Length: 413
Image (cartoon, rainbow, N blue to C red; front, side, top):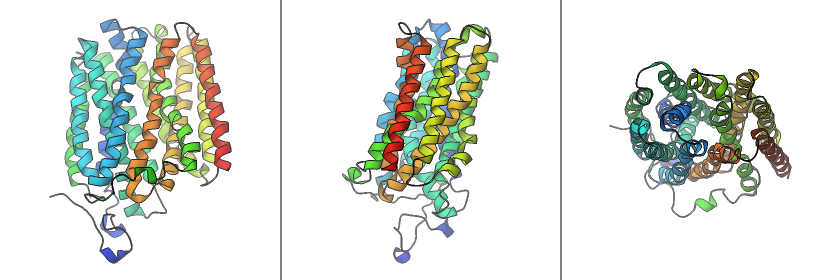
């Protein structure tokens, strides 16, 4: 039997929202593990990029295309998964999402034989991630606040941690198996299948926080998406969440691959772990800097991104020297910190703007914009044929600086 925690109609809050006393402080662990499992499935592919380039003879553009096609599945997954979980319940979305994440991994297993499997698997993984991250964000927030009280609001931090754990450990384990285990295009995917199987029963038993039919249809545009702060601050900020991370973990390692013969796979895995780990470690700083209604956290987040991109410029300039891999590690740490700050900032802004009945829906719109950043390595790889990577990255840093100035100005207004 599944659980749904409710309160009496006269208790002063909607009947589909759990009361604080009814929810255990660990109730969010099930949805948290599910989000981590989907994040694992989404990023386990990253350190294998250079392996597939060698195995299948893929061009840099096609290689980054297999990485970026993830966003094509992810955005509709976000836009459908969030509102559906608002209307039909978090669990009813999360269970099929976990199954889809598992299916995406199954499609990637034969990817060592043809690139078509890679595109298909990444597309399905993206759709699963979109549904999981939008509904999971709302579910974790609701369960966390029900247990800790709304003023504590640990939801954004917990969501970023669970996503980052999946994003970091998945590539590390996959990269280690690809580097040293047999069947390097098969074995790296098996741990995700096990983790997903563990997460499913925990999600089934997790307390539901939305009753079926809880959110009215056709009113998502009233949930805050047309708010001036959302359009002028949150939307410009959002692409830098994963734009910064994807440049660190998918683009920069390819620039120094020639300096790491025989160790490029594990290096890519470590870079991914460092990017995700920095995103976790920086979160206490992000929460201390945050002041509602001011640009403090926005400016700090984008300032870190600009700094990381300037280090990335140095990576591109010195890619052929022994300093290149060291600079990649430094850039990954700084860009990962920027990712973590931007993610916490965006989620806090969304939760302040969203109506309770549309929390997952507005979160989905924000995350759909944020995941546009995942395609950043693709145009960089394509343009690198005619423009030096250092020049490209300097241009990206300039764009981030302009975003910092714009969003800070809009936030003050």
